[in-house]
Image (cartoon, rainbow, N blue to C red; front, side):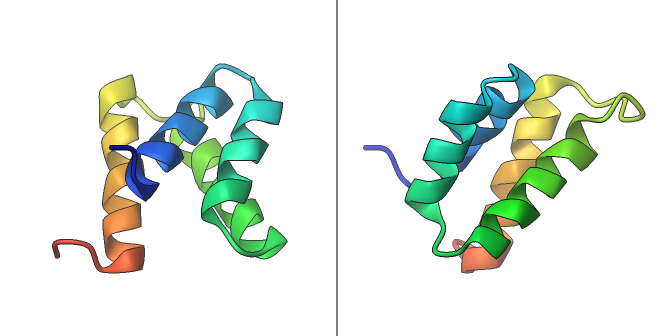
Length: 75
């Protein structure tokens, strides 16, 4: 079963692959406002920047952690 965390991680993967149309579609499914979508995109850009030496799986884990904190899921 796909949940909000899976959708957001998929949105990050689409962002990392420069598939911005898919990213925006997925973010629209999980967010209620343009402001929230903008915040997620900024977060994706921050963790995906060249300055970050994290592995891709670690970056995806950051997305998951941010979601768990935002929605207070299993904290």
